[in-house]
Length: 182
Image: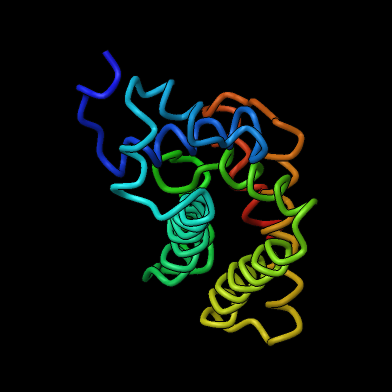
């Protein structure tokens, strides 16, 4: 049945993202992706020049979905710093806004790719700058805003790295304490 099924560029990206997240970049092979999609390998070339082009598209998606989302949510209007911090947290609560699995997969890939490590560092710097600017908008001096941004951002990464799975009602019960701490 391969060859008769129509797939889109988005289908290729979706299956590639899934493989990247669950199996790693080494398993991103055009033939195996085509097999998973039930299409011929040649259909890949309607949408991508080669594997490197697919990888580049995945990284562009990662950047748009994860980094730009944090920047956008940190820049949203809020009544006070607590509401602004809640905007930041929304990125991580809603998986349609921030893809934690994709972020970890890209970071794992960067362990073996120095050029990608540079891109990860730039993404972290942009994210931290957005959180820092958020604190500065609410009257925090530069040094304090920088410290608070790092505490907030890296605390959030700690939750993800440790794969902490707490019920939302428990997290929300801690929110006042978290906000006081930040």
